[in-house]
Image (cartoon, rainbow, N blue to C red; front, side, top):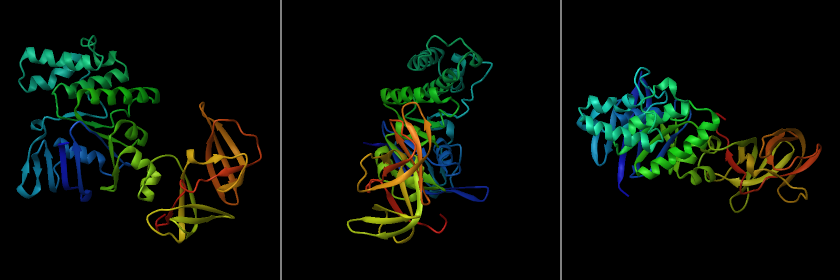
Length: 357
């Protein structure tokens, strides 16, 4: 697979702060890549650098094998000549222009013929289920429809790469879930590459072929959604992906990659991460991997049920004992009292605790 986009050791400083600290990655043709991370991690700055809206200090950016930025050669291609489709978080629609005019605006600025504009605008709107809404104004559309207009405006250029900056953040929860399905389907059907910025790990896993997890201007970990979720390399990656129980205690290494974690009056067996662990440690286990076992047995700890919450498709429980506090899911309602709570050793990741934790 050839690459639509390639970044090599891109560095960028804004206001005296180094925002990007040597970022390198490639986006394969027809691939969806999510830039995931907390606020201030550098993900939107990467997108803006690719779009030509920010100028890096050094490094190299290539689109379809052609450099659009090369710090060593002082080479910079402006945004309007990069041919990319960009969807902003705010949609940025002209309120006094119709849907057709919003989508066609950039093509008119580029001097595209009237007939070609009409064809390309109608094609883009039809692809997004907006073919009959061209005469409406933005205030006459729902939030989801306005989002689709913004995407149509980006697609009308027939770009090799679609750049999306938090494209679903202005939608409510139900619309977000629906939108990420049709947006992923649309990108797949069109066969274009997409670079998506998001802080939502569910959104990233649902829509992307690969994820780059950013932390303070560097790539913390990269991989498929499955790799990122099931095999985190660091505490940061483990905690950012998924809902977790965080257990602070002391650890000692065991045999075959196992480790023992003492939390309060309880000792748990887990898997040592990033090498042998000893002394102060952090145990992490996904909430869905903690379970209630009626029979008890290895890996189980007797704990008291403190509170419960009904989530519709399942119950969420809080258990406590001797300084140990954990959340767990179960499909069935549980009675008050003490229960056997299971911690599978393969799912309990034990890290040495950094000084800052």
